[in-house]
Length: 289
Image 1 (cartoon, rainbow, N blue to C red):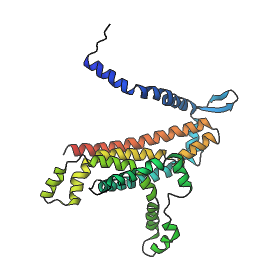
Image 2: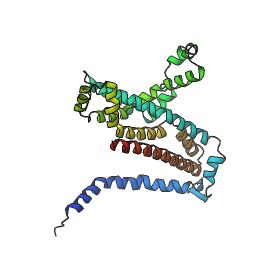
Image 3: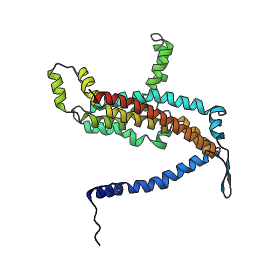
Image 4: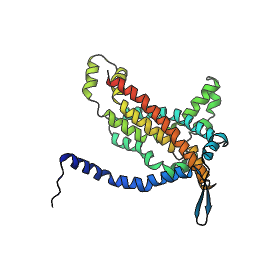
């Protein structure tokens, strides 16, 4: 018996055929652990020879995170403060790198590969070991006593902030590989005729960037902003992630760690939602021009 499908059903079947493995993997390795994590966040779990013994404690873990734990909220605050300063630096560096790599010069494919190398090498445990060895800090500020010399010309509060940003440049370069490639792909979709028309009208390169390049790569800026935020929240040296891991694997406090994880997730979700709404308004206004 021959089974016939119309075009619409065939497209639906083909679509589900492509994502069926992902659906199976998500249910098996993501949905079940997520459900268990929500359940654990309302339980007090005691390890025993037969497994974990659960005792319902309601919202006790969530209240403890905000009212009893003196470490979680400061760590959460420092993580978001660091993210707010880190994301713009990564975006600016990756846009500048993409603009340079988009120019025609000999060996640019090699340089594109070099910019992406940190994504492969400096990730996960390798990145954590490098950070523990101080590889992310620029020694010039410590070895040459740069603070004392610049203190004669720049006020102390401003200088400390500038040196803090400068000291984080290594991490900015390591984190900008994927974003640079995304911006580079966006730049290559912009028609050269737009720049030629702008040049004939007397526009400078600076004006061409703000009137042509920047609006055209705005969707990539949204993607890279969200990607950088998520990467910042889940990176190997994230203090909140370290704290949650300590509560799980050192203290065996599974229920409290699950509650902390869900609080962290909700806060991240809200932040990403705010950024998405802000960019959505900007994109809508540009499309309406």
